Length: 146
Image 1: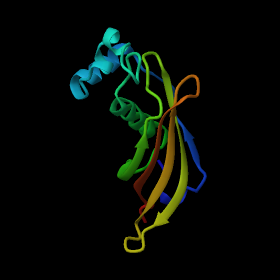
Image 2 (image 1 turned 180 degrees about the horizontal axis):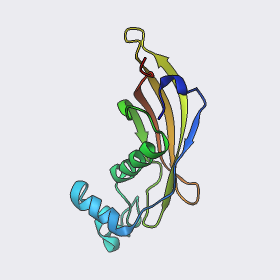
Image 3 (image 1 turned 120 degrees about the vertical axis):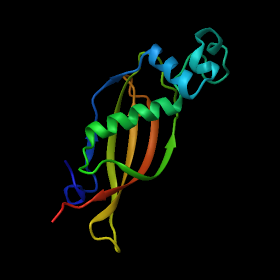
Image 4 (image 1 turned 90 degrees about the horizontal axis):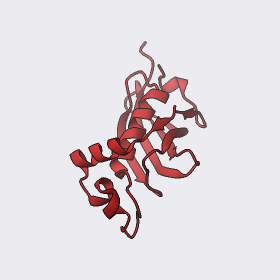
């Protein structure tokens, strides 16, 4: 498990691969984002942007969260404070995703010496290296207990 003093600007973390299935796309959409381009393969073909079924951006984000927790093992968890996210391309059935994380800044707290803020960029890529999600995230990270 990693603490603030274990991290450096430029550190990179790469996740395992994750296969996105059509059933999973539809199940997520039914529960959280019930739009036609996430649920109906035939009707999605005529969508002016997606031109076929696509996973919800929130589904892609949820997969990224899972992969973050596995490849970026912080001792007290990934405690988010801010995120800026984009989905430049849709996630499709049978895409194989992985995430690449790079730390871009580490800001020790001036008022609470047991912690700091870590800023990192993430890309979620599919099997063709298409970027499906870009984000810049700020998280709270604790120092090693004394």
